[in-house]
Image (cartoon, rainbow, N blue to C red; front, side, top):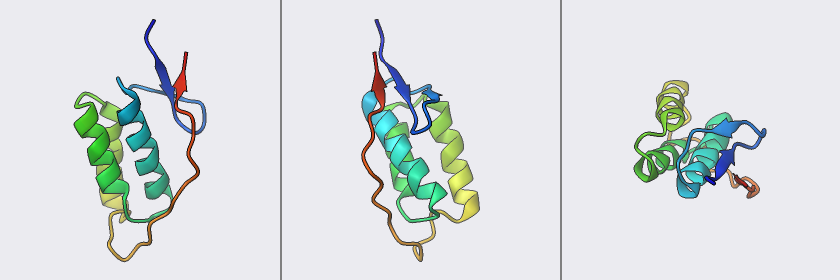
Length: 85
């Protein structure tokens, strides 16, 4: 039985590992808050799972919205559970 990973809204992620899913969620949190850290987190998600298409897409989107701007402040979102059996 393989693990299924979900985002903060309960939607399934295509990540193949917990590390990629956690980095992705952190990156999305930063991108939605327009804070720094989105790019690094999403790049870490891709490094953990090179086939994680959602992370690739989010990285491009965060770059186009200014979420990677150094003038933005870093957020520290609440940890979430990303694993479901």
